[in-house]
Image (cartoon, rainbow, N blue to C red; front, side, top):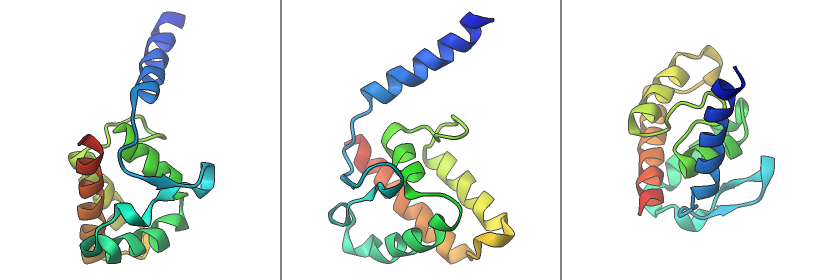
Length: 120
């Protein structure tokens, strides 16, 4: 039983140690955020929206870590373009997210851009 738990833990720890942040971030812990200079002008409105809407339920640290590592920190699921789309749909269905389809689409496009930038 210990081997079954230990192996996934070692895999996650190795991913965290290998992950290299290519998207610039500011702050630490709960104050972690993407750096303004990492966001092109075309994505600034979506970035502003992300900073207002997403922090209603969680800190941006969770989003930054997911983009940097490619793994959603809470669920351990892959955080790739398909995962981002799935999270967008999930947020659209949450009654307290107060987000419409256009806002979700804009944030999904921003997160996909950040994922692409992180792989360069």
